[in-house]
Amino acid sequence: MSAKKILVLAGMLALIVIAGCRSAHVTSAIIYIDQQMFDKAIDVLHEGLDYSPDEAEAYFYLGEAHSKKAEEDIRDNGYLAASRNYGMAYDYYKKTLEMEPTLYEKVQESLLYSYIMQSNNAKNEYQAGFYEAAEGYFRLAYASLPDSVAPIKNLARMKIRLAMENDNDPAILDEALALLDQVLDVNPGAYELLSDKANVLSRLDRKPEAAAIYDDLLANHPDDAALMIDIANLSQEQGDNERAGDLLVRVMNIYENDDDMANDENVYFLALQAGAFYGDSRVGRYQEAIDLYQKALSLEDMPTESTLLGKLKLHHDYGKKLGEEYNAEEEAVAKADLEQRTVEQFQTGVNVGNALVSQYFESVNGYFYLAECYRMLEDEANYNMHMDSWRKLSGME
Image 1: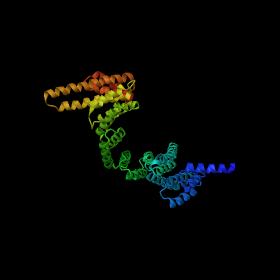
Image 2: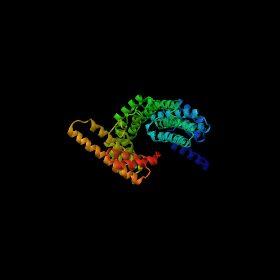
Image 3: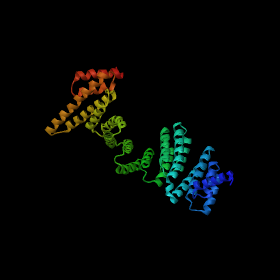
Image 4: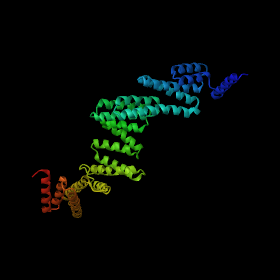
């Protein structure tokens, strides 16, 4: 036998060994895919399935051909065609796994390749401010892997952001709502999307619907900090500052007890925000508000004007409230207790106010509340002195 014939025979034997039980149709399709002749690959695979309908690899390479064809469509700006091809590819990949579960890793690799590529394209366009292009890529990412809710979630959130930039444009919010419902129809338990839906409903002024969703989510996910912050924001919009404060305190406790050092800075801002909610006159939980402001002060390297002023105002407001209770009380022991507590609040207010104006000489409101605390303590000289400073700084003189 000639050397040439030996080499040809060896090549044929090698091809048989590599292919194993693979059909000639699948082998041909692989070659066509490598040559970017995707339609030819699709045709030959369907032809092969007419003869061997149970060949799992045929379905896998149909997925590969349609996936590559989708990429070709994108290069030609054929986004609708690309979406259809990604959808067909996904169906063929799933069919592959139904027939041959051992191909799971190969299928996942192919699915994730397309998904990650289009997701990255979407994020790049979004960051560059090309929202229309970003939307197209988000939709392609979802078409390539509809098991993932992330592209629709990101697209809906992009719509929410656009709506916010346009005074909560209801038309854009309706688009976001439709996107969320699209995925929730298939994944009703995707609670992050339910949270986003509640957010959109709230912005559309459908607050009772939003509140119902949030209440259900909170009952099932009581330790979800991000969820609690969303509900706190809705509670604030609805005028329920007490509930907003309670939720933020719960978040603060979660952050303080976890191992994530990055959350420590958030504790400071949460303490101030929750303290402001509790200090609202409609809530009147002044002592808790004062404690939260004191916590914030302990986290500051140097006391800031705004924090000191906030704490001063809380002592002033709490003192006034206790004074009103004192005037209404008739029982002698309780009245004496209220009197002492009232004086303590105004005296503490004086201490905080003096610390404030000694560091921040032009704190207009600092002088005002400091003067008021002195007035309530019947210290006329200090009241007049600090009220004069307030008048000068505020332009009243």
